[in-house]
Image (tube, rainbow, N blue to C red; front, top):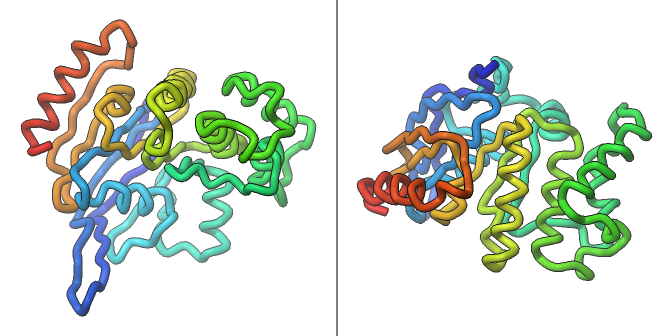
Length: 252
């Protein structure tokens, strides 16, 4: 059953640059429902990545509030925020961000350290994720020994290992070639179909098509909110026309 899993109240983020206050996020009120694939778009400098970092607890708001399942997560202590990020939030970075001197398996396992989870259950979940991400046979390799697409799929495994309530992704295909990017997007779509809540920032129209909701930011404010049906590959052309028209009307 769908419900609001995350919401913001008058969320603001400001930076001081050369003595000038730069308001990047301006009084955003936003609700995100569980099991949605929400895409955040906007031109360069619109604040989309900043918003993602505020929602995920990777950055602190200047003013305003963020709630996850009605728990206020703004202004938590660093210890509590670290626990929240470990247990309830998964994050996939554009730069992949794997530890180079750990194997893929060790990278995926790393978020489970110092948790009280059953080790056999963790190992079973890793095996399941490796199969789902088509990484069987690569788990003992180091990041430098596999392709960019395989590294990003391992990063998704790592983000998913603790079964997060929300998976955040910041331009997850930005450093990949087109075929690698398509493969990663297929995986993102698959885990969403299985019930995972996903919030993704992208500037790529083809990536945006995977969402069933697209939020468009302009100058730190929500300038549009488009609802779509669930993604189907055989409807890509029609979907692309709808999304393109939506973002074109907003100056894309």
